[in-house]
Amino acid sequence: MNEMIVDFPGGARVDAHYGPYTIMTDQPAVGGGNGSAPTPFSLFLASIGTCAGIYVRDSAASAGCLRTESASFSAWRTTCAPG
Image 1: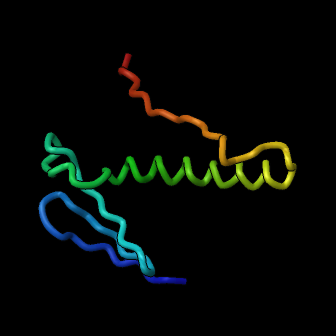
Image 2: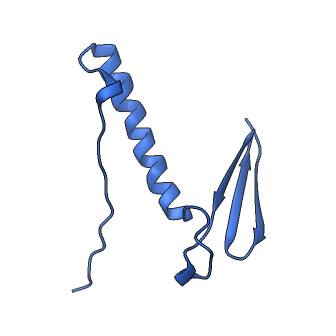
């Protein structure tokens, strides 16, 4: 297993280094950042979506029922107002 190193390159940036990859994050301007990279929460949502996508792709491929090159799915975040 590779070690993950998290560092703080400046401003509101937080980067994670894992194996040969660097995952960069930032906050939008209204959150004190520059918007130079996705927010950590956006990457969290993307990781859930890509995990689901791998499951769909592998299931479809093993069943032989779907050409994944032409498939996609959508997910979105909603904010619920208290009340």
